[in-house]
Length: 96
Image (cartoon, rainbow, N blue to C red; front, side, top):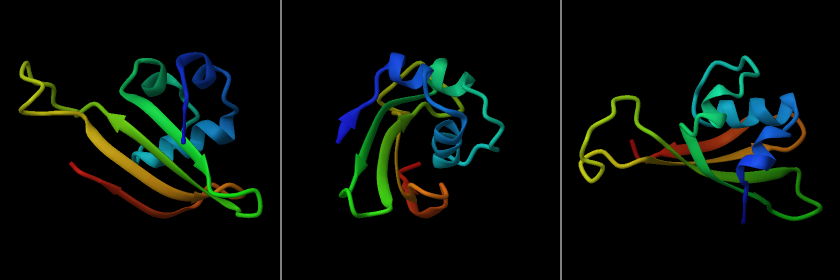
């Protein structure tokens, strides 16, 4: 699994951004705001194999209701299995 840094996120195509936005249930508008502002961070991508048309994406998402105590409200861990071809999500989960 490779980590995507800020420079990689900034050059993503619109279809790639839509995959990430779908990852955490946002309406797909193509906006980069949530990624650039680091609401979604520590993004990891794994293409299962060259012959497989699916991938696994993991990330951390800052909770929508912030608290001053990070231990009481840590970032949510999100994962998704999706099609590399269509961007359709086949399975996903969050610890929220």
